[in-house]
Image (cartoon, rainbow, N blue to C red):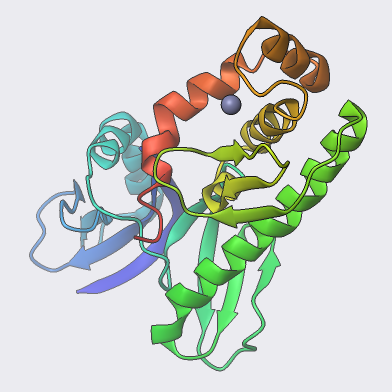
Length: 236
Ligand SMILES: [Zn+2]
């Protein structure tokens, strides 16, 4: 039996998996399966079957594969070979044991060196620091546009809220916002900054949000409702 990964990626419910192709002397026909334990998507082929048509067939099965992924209750690990969402796009964790320990992003790859058992913690740290850096800059820019001041901006991992604003102007966010499409992060930042104008969720508050954002954050709210829970499974 031989196994190789392919260029096909399936995504459902916050889980992304690259299709792996296995060749087996025992296989009589093509078979596509989603492993219920870890969500691995495997295409098994008879030894001599042509790869091109097989991949095309796997692509035609996308709907049910992604449904199966969406039903997975399991966590999304951050280990070598994992694909995680980053700003709403798949980011592949590319581990090179002998590589540099400084994490580097190259397009849709996150290049990580050093010992395997450290990969998860280091990727997590990188995600949190990316989130902190961008959220701090974006919050201060939005505050400037709104003509308000903000205090400390920090990131944490709260279960129930994506952001919060204290009466003294300190703003806290979930680092998981960095996993989501940038528009969702932007809407969350504007929401918290608008609390520096109004500490409630009344009509004046929503007017301020719309003015600062340039739109009503309807699509972003719908996105959070549909995908927010899945973001909590990343790295747990
Ligand atoms: Zn609020």
